[in-house]
Image 1 (cartoon, rainbow, N blue to C red):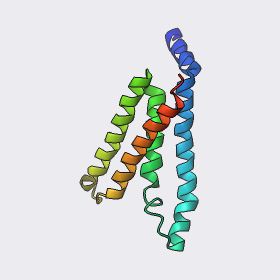
Image 2: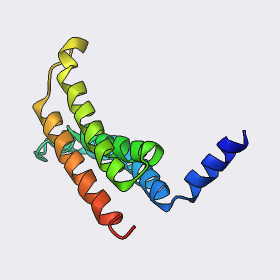
Image 3: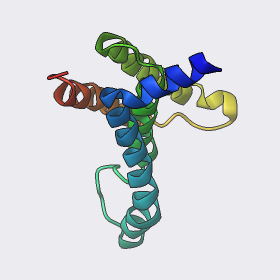
Image 4: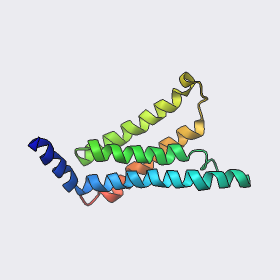
Length: 131
């Protein structure tokens, strides 16, 4: 029990992990707010927002998954980059498996996922370059 307590307190003391967790939580909150207000507004107005409203789940959802995963599982900066790529590929594979779930593959969701993965790695490099 003491080892678990020590490990958890070490996790909490890691500035990098806490920053990553807050970014992941922020992406979830942004998605929930935009899904509730932005998407209905775009649809009601009949606006062409270049598929942003349609792909919010994939873009912000990928960001949330990436940063929460690296917060919990990332051991080093280099390990974080491997996890970012694994999570991004996993979301793309999930999108490609949609026909098995009775849904159509949406190429815009795949594009949004890849762009989000690249953005997440760039953001991670920018934020954690000094650490």
